[in-house]
Structures are given as C-alpha cells and as structure tokens.
Length: 150
Image (cartoon, rainbow, N blue to C red; front, side, top):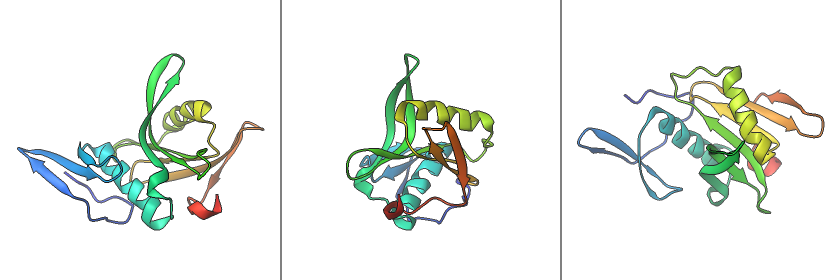
C-alpha cells in the first residue's frame, strides 16, 4: 500500500504487472519494482529536482562504493557541475525509524564519499546535516539548501 509521505505528491507512472507494482524511474529510464524504500527515493528525487532546483543530470541513484572491502550502495548522490559529490541521501522505508544507527550507516558511506551535505529520510521525517570534515563535526540544518546555494 502506498502511503502518503511528508513530501509533495508527484505524478508518477505506476504499473501493475500481475500484482507487482512498479514505478517508472525517470533518471534510470526504466521500471523499478516499487518497494517502500523506492517510494521514498522516487519522491525525494522529485523533491530535489522540482522544489530545490537540483539538476536531473547531476543526480545518481544507487551508486556503488567499497567500504572495508564490502560492496555497498548509496541511495542518492548529487554532483556539482565540476563532478564533485555535494549531497549524499540515505532513504529508508516509512516504517523504518530514523535512529542513530541510520545516521551511522550514512556517515560510514560518507567516509568514502567525503560529501559536505547529507540527508536521511524515511519519507515522513527528513534530517539534513552539514559535515565539516576538517574538524570531524557536523551540524543539523533546518532544511535542505537549494542547489544554487551549495
């Protein structure tokens, strides 16, 4: 069941194939099985593009990374026009509470990416952090900055 999220609604292209719901991913240009986490990821991508002005061409979904020899996937990484990573987004299903463990997971991924801006969302709650790598510190932001301001 698709629950309403704490993000604006968007006109997604949903397909029901014998009881398996899929959503058209306009970035990957293909149908993706619609899991609760994918529902959040697709909403957050549209939020980045339509509300915050992040260029579609600079957003990468489910990028691979190596962490302690293990292959992991980041949900959303946004680049600037110079090809540098500027935002890391970790998406969870709405039923998953955002806890310290969720932040720790995103922070571990960020040890590889070294991105200055991080977001964690389950579609209902969203947290944004500015990471200061030089001082190993971070501060929470009230909202995600628009693309042109980062």
